[in-house]
Image 1 (cartoon, rainbow, N blue to C red):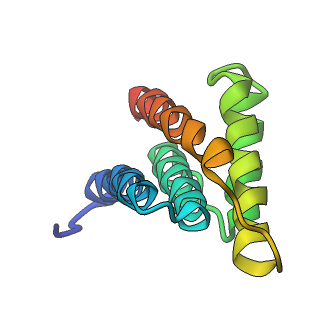
Image 2: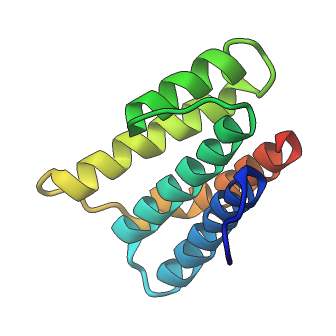
Amino acid sequence: MTIENRDDYIQYRFHRAKESHEEALILAEKDKWNAVINRLYYSCFYAVSALLLKHDIKTQSHDGTRTQFGLLFIKTGKIDKTYGKLFTKLFDYRQKSDYGDLYDYDEDLAKPLISDVKSFLETIGEHI
């Protein structure tokens, strides 16, 4: 995919969001639950990045992305607060599994998040 303009970049980021979700599905088949959490978080992150870019909002960090999403879309009621909570939960889980010791997520925790993130992507897609 070539990125010639802002709309192409928005579509690229949203494509990466969907691709990361697909990667989570593949990893789930192999019971790689920490990696599933990682890919689900990045799926949400890429989708929110695309959404913010669509509205000319630039951020410099993951925290900045979460903060702007919360302020401009969750607190205003444009997007249901359950999606803000999901994004934050995945951020926290990913931080623990990527950087902490002795965090091994299991199927019971991770598998339901796969469908939650699919719904998240559908909702963000409607706003893009």
